[in-house]
Image: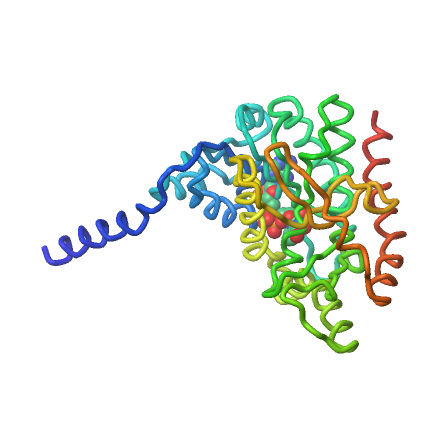
Length: 328
Ligand code: NAI
């Protein structure tokens, strides 16, 4: 009896502590690859959002249990599961934000580009379905190599006649999860990740050695996790946190908040490259402005880093574009 009354109290307490999550809006979010290392914790974090009324989880396997598990969290978002290609269209109908963490992750010693052959096809197939079923949605691409999978998504959407460059985002949020506000530009692999430490807010005076060390540390942050997990996965929990932040920012922008800024890899005319990561302002229609001022007044070290990253980023973009064009 004692235990039962304790449990009742605990339940009441838990209902009280979650009562702050009242539905504020009713956006639909779909996660494609929701059964994976990133997908599962991301689904949990998105389930916590008061801006979400429906959370659709898609994977080729193991997603039923994830949805059943999450449905016990008493927050407003209704969770539904969709397994396999035949259920993909239904998963995407009426969705406002689609997040794509589907595909294979790196193992120690692998570069993001080593994932190209498998993930290129997965992203292509999934974005074709997005084009057919929710062409107006914001699309967040997490699957690596982001420097190529975003151009792949763009080509697929162009072929389907529904490409809106303001609504296609490569998720680079993981690169900016540091305590100070540092713009990180370029791409999302190795040297293409360029933190602009001279633009840190609040401003911090680093020595030249500190700038070099911190730059390399930020460029290798994902690789550090891959190596620490020693073959058991890549950065999944921090990535889920980063992706959830980007989802929440997108939903706030869709909901009319006029003060939403994130870094993302997007189609861009900031440099001569067709895609480039930089800080952007998000609005109801996607990218509302590219914050170009951050590329002005770079230090010599940053300017050199920018020039050095361009050939690799250009090649990754062209590889993605060519992958789709040679099949059509
Ligand atoms: P994981 O292997 O744990 O999960 C991937 C999930 O995708 C699995 O559940 C699998 O069944 C599913 N999947 C495979 N083919 C699919 C298809 N055709 N349709 C739908 N789902 C499919 O991998 P993890 O760790 O979740 O990583 C996922 C991706 O995210 C990888 O490509 C990884 O490199 C990338 N990543 C990106 C980061 C970024 O900063 N953008 C950071 C960390 C990882």
